[in-house]
Length: 113
Length: 114
Image (cartoon, rainbow over all chains, first blue to last red; front, top):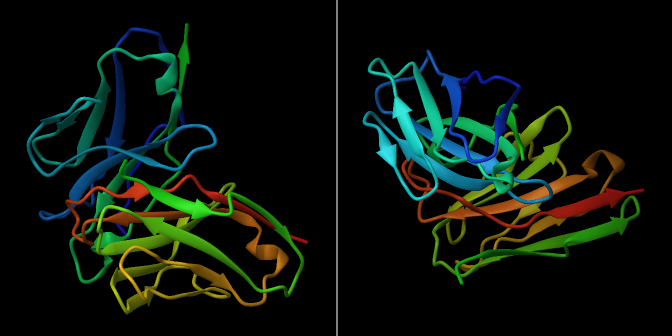
C-alpha cells in the first residue's frame, strides 16, 4: 500500500497560516495526493487533491514538490473550526483499488485562540 | 442538499442478533463504500461497490455482508454481530472509483455489541 508520513500533531494560532507537511516518497506517476480532515465526532471531509501542480480551492491550498515526494496543505487563516485530524492520502491508480482511501494516523491540528 | 445519510446513528445490541445499518446518497454516485474506525487502527475499508449489483471486499470484510440493489442505497449487514465489531462505521460515496474523485462521508454509526 502507498504510504504517507505526517507529524502526529501540530499547533497553530487563530488567524495565522498553517502548513501541514506530508511525505510520500513511494508515490508513482499516476497516484493522486488527497487531503481529508475529520472534525471531532464527524465523518471525514474532503479538503483538496492534486496530481502535479499546486491547487487552490475555497478551503485550502495544496503545494506539491517538484519531485512529488512531498506535499504541504496550507490553511491560509486558521480558525477554531479548523481544529481536526488531517489525513494525507495517496490514491493509487492501479486495478480496482483506486476507490479505496488508505487512512494513516494523520496530523491532529489544534488551534489556539 | 447533497448528502450521505446513515441510520441508525447509535446502536447497542447483543451478540448474535442480526442488524442492518442503512446508507443512502442523493448524488447519483456510482461508487459507495463502508469503513470502520477503531482507536489506534484508523479507518479501514470493509466493502465497496463500483455500481449497482457490483460489490467487492475491502480490507476487513469478515463478519459483514453488503448489497447494492439500487444506486442510492448500500446497506451494511451484520448477520451475527460479535463484540469485536463494536466500532464507529462510516459510509462514503463518490461519482466513481477513479482516483481523482472526492468521496463524501456520512455522519457515522456508533455500534456497540455486548
